[in-house]
Image (cartoon, rainbow, N blue to C red; front, side):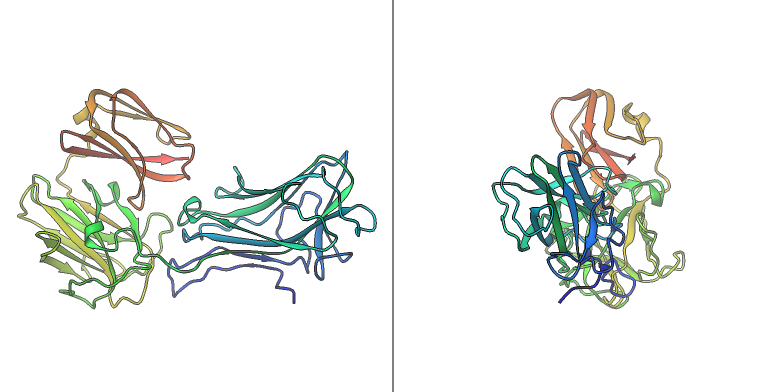
Length: 405
């Protein structure tokens, strides 16, 4: 039984960021949407129904077959790849091709095909020589396809000798749809947020997708599974904590609740709770705190009112009385910004630590030793988007936003 031709699924719950990568192709209606480089669909000696095939020989030595680019739908889980293939001599397409034919590499891209990452290679060491199609299966680690990443898949074949066809059929590329809890699902895993002068200065994207229930009962709104953050009270003793649309997709609709706590993690005391702030649009929340103890560490939990939706959102801790000229305080220069590959940080004072995090607050790069003069970070392996450079010196922290092209 053949599958439908091309199917890219966004498994959504309401308006939520509950997605997965799912690509199916059986070539029954041609190479729809695939970049083929002389792969043609045929009804002759196929794996099943119609297959796609490419003839390689001495003057035609490369064959590639690439899927459409699935934009921004990775949920960060592992991806399973399955397909049928065979390699047979040109002509009647019934004789298995002997050893020495070349190889075929399976690859994936997270940037629309600008760069490709190898998954596995079929060559003489593992090729099944037969005139019948066989199934191959591979797993792509979710750690290499971050949440929200693009995804594309391709076969890249290289000729070495002979004159043969490569048949490919019944491709199924599917990401695990199960959801692991967020990294800050529990209070002891609370993510530290920096305090800016404005909401947008250090806002981070977030989602309660996969969050589990908390032991703390809600002081306002309807309870639901939440995620945790923490921050250090500034010298002014004043902060605002607010949610709004996410930076990545600007999705509306998350009905948030924010509750702030003081005290040790095992004995928290509620300080304030807000369901729908009159100052916030679209049922986002805002807590305004004054008279706090400078230097005290506070925790806060964010959840969806009632716990039945998981749209993405952003969250920020800010104080509009803070100076935004932070770079001058430490005489630090960060360039270029935007940055393509190499980010330079210049300082005349030795620093304790430099950490680069993504918009989710996840640490992606860190340096701790010999941090004086020109410190270079190679961002070549990072996806395009916004990142935060956190600089620590003598317990003082400054954070700067950079854009990776």
